[in-house]
Length: 219
Length: 303
Ligand code: SF4
Image (cartoon, rainbow over all chains, first blue to last red; front, top):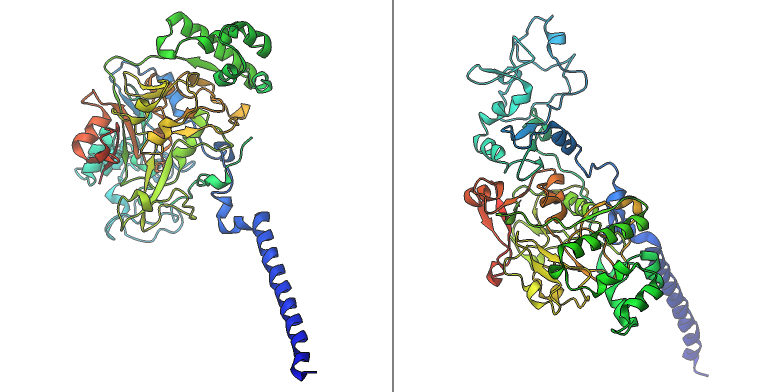
């Protein structure tokens, strides 16, 4: 007998064992992907699962301000729009509640006891509270020319620097509107969307992508 | 026909399949249990040729059907176009962040099928470096947060063309442009041939391949017969500028939900309108201008 012939058998059997092993691992992988492992790759099953608006109860799909607008009965009046109220933090207004009793400290400093959550990130480094807030009557804002205005008119303050955007806003091109294209509208203050102390828009989480055609279900 | 009993909304095609023309009315009444009015509806002429009385009867009939089916009051109107109004839409690409709030607000407002899923708005993600390149764009982007540094976003829905190829190819004239510019579909007249879908260069038309799934709790009960009323299997649908809202003066749902205020809407015939202002003051373009479809949907850059 050919001595080499003996070796052929063990060689091919180890090959077969290897093949079986590979096939097993392959099958397991495919199985785990089909069983939902794929959701790890597309986060939240994006493109695989049909999401509906009802899956996002945290989003206000119908802006309730339309009811206020209807109730205000602006139809036909000259008052073409209403601005949403300023977005004050809870119990912060009127400012004079605390500040009336306090000696104004115009020193530029890092705020410690109160308002320490405010981080100024708005234009030049020299920006300071009293560029916009009025020292003597804290319930008002102060324009560059000394005019005092309420917080509900803060767009006039922003408009001093952001003239072109202010113009677009008044025309309804900048910012969101709720209401009637041919009648009363609810405008938003700049501060309703932009944090006045750090106005740059923060990125947000997108809602899920559409289902890829190959995963469209249905009866 | 079992589906008819369940849905309460008999498909014209199902019906035609089952009955000879001569005895259609009586047979339909007997077999489907549908009211004689409902039957009249299928035999009637197309929507545009109905008399006001016939329209009233059909609306009442639909309301009864839907209210029974969804267990709550559903209204169906046929509010006509306003005089001296021609609608246009503006979308600010320099602001859109691709968050898809508009996509889902549209589904909610317009009673689209939840599963199989139908979206009238598709937000395309594009690389800033490549500019507007539809072939390279993707609607399936899904990062943790948007906007992403190197990308911009282009939401696309029905472009409401003045010169609409979709309406021209429809063999039964089930889709047309209204006086106020809204391109609508008569779902009762649509035969589901999908010619309009292949004619639309914007992929804006969608087909109900299966019975639409619309949970009763999710139904928007304020509907228009040519717009967001619940649809049936086998018909084509698409954006109507929220016909049920805009003909009553409201903004479309997508424009009210957009967190960055990128979406603008109004009357193209009114020089003072928001849409005319942006067309005057901003850089504006339309999609696939070279096809001469003349969209009333304008993309613009506010900055
Ligand atoms: S909601 Fe506005 S920002 Fe978000 S994708 Fe739609 S158009 Fe863009």
